[in-house]
Image (cartoon, rainbow, N blue to C red; front, side, top):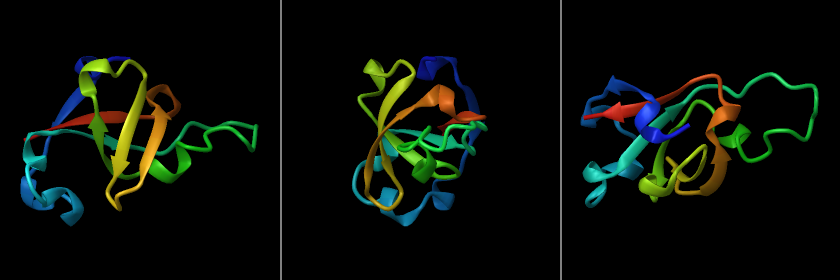
Length: 93
């Protein structure tokens, strides 16, 4: 799943979490993640669970294909798989 294949959702810059409103973040790529998919394995989605229902900034969006390095809105960095979420939306300003 490439970022260009994701559905886009209009988003207002004023609704962005305050961590991302600093500096030049306006020109970065942001995604909104839904909850993770159901799985019977308790060790599945270890890195994805903290990112569910958050807005994340994608690092190196041109190199992202199903696996992304993201910064969550509290400043922590996670390596996640996009296909582990029920829905991933690309935020368009």
